[in-house]
Amino acid sequence: MRTRDVTYIAVSATLICICSWIAVPAVVPFTLQTFAVFLVIGLLGGKRGFFAVFVYLIIGALGVPVFSGFRGGLGTLLGSTGGYLIGFLFTAAVFWLITHFFGEGTAALAIGMACGMIVCYAFGTMWFMIFNLNEEKSVQFFLTLLKCVIPFIIPDAIKIYLALKLSGRLKKLIR
Image 1 (spheres, rainbow, N blue to C red):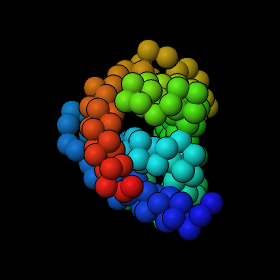
Image 2 (cartoon, rainbow, N blue to C red; image 1 turned 135 degrees about the vertical axis):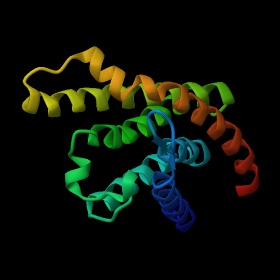
Image 3 (cartoon, rainbow, N blue to C red; image 1 turned 30 degrees about the vertical axis):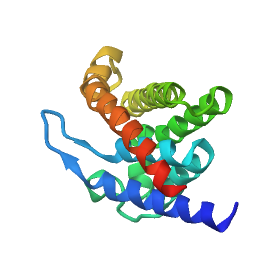
């Protein structure tokens, strides 16, 4: 990687850190963390975006409070909702794969982000269920979806739309 790539990755990881601290109040509050992930992969592409997400997760795993609610450490990353954080890597990887084969047109970017989010939901939900299975002996799939996925679908769709629009405009400035 060139110095410019490393700089983009570092700045983008920082953006994800900052956006994870910004909470939007709602019935189920959500952060701008996923928006930052979408924006970063949209701006940098799959490969550099993947590494930016990876750097973000490493910073958090080392204990720096970069996750939502100013949390950090392996306990957070390996906790019940840590699967969604790790799922961001899958979001970037799926995006990278789709844009590698289908190019970087708006439709491919949107499909890559949407498919990446679905994979993140799937991984995070399985993680959540397995983590809580040890505590509750019985975890229902539908109730987990109702708690962990369904409230976030519309906000995440809006984040994808905004990230597509913003990354398209910012790419022109970066070049």
